[in-house]
Amino acid sequence: MAWQEIGDRVFTRKYPFFNQQIGVVLGGRDVLVVDTRSTPAQAREIASELRDLTRDPVSIVVDTHWHFDHSFGNSVFRPATIWGHVRAAEQLRREGAATIEEVAAEIPEIAADIRETVIDPPERTFEDRATVHVGDRVVELSYHGRAHTDGDIVLVVSDANVMFAGDLLEEGAPPSFGDSFPLEWPATVEQLIPLATGAVVPGHGAIGDRAFVEHQLAAFRRLAELARAVHERRLEIEAAVSGSPFGPNTPRTAFERALAQIRGELD
Ligand SMILES: [Zn+2]
Figure 1 (cartoon, rainbow, N blue to C red):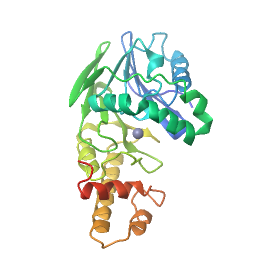
Figure 2: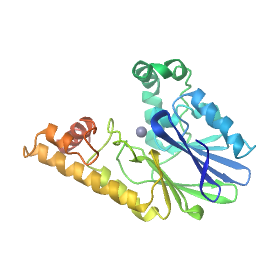
Figure 3: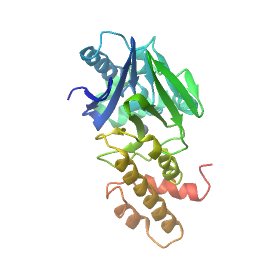
Figure 4: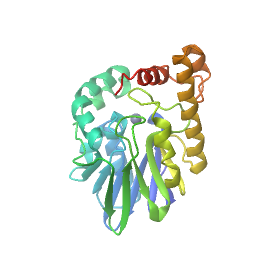
């Protein structure tokens, strides 16, 4: 694996751990990193591999959302400024410490490393949109509604036709639904279509394009339909899971969260 230039001075690197995509945007002396991986050790790996691209330090970090695999490396890049959605920062502050222990128990191979995490939430937060200057160029951050979490943002580097979509889009595995809003996910992804003018970088898996976004959108719509059928007792939840557009490995949580939303329990 190595850095791949997917647009002018826009790079991605796919890490085998979680099949995760990390992004980099270079402009002038600025270095922007998209997501910081699961532990300080993993973040230090990004920092040292960045030496292949630039000698300048990371000056800007953007967390696409609060989940540990996207934000627990944040502290390694200080004194960089860190951007994220206002609710992503809140969630990280509220859930960060407990998440360290949950993940340490679930994934023993990173237990020691994740316990070194210093929870370091974004301080440059916003609700709907923000503009970040990376040297001579501009990166637009925007929020489009609840979906994978209640604070997922996308980055658009329009001079390079690249969109980083975080875990709003996932390739190669079903999306993660643990604290998701499955009924709103389709409307959120629909808004990404006009932004997908070139490469589309998911949080995990292979890089796609607008057709990939449209394909995922159809799948999220189908999942919501299946959940409504379960709610209306036209379908058993097991049949919905095995017939899921994301494949038979789709977690049952996807439907449990959707049903909770239909019942108004997540508002
Ligand atoms: Zn996530």
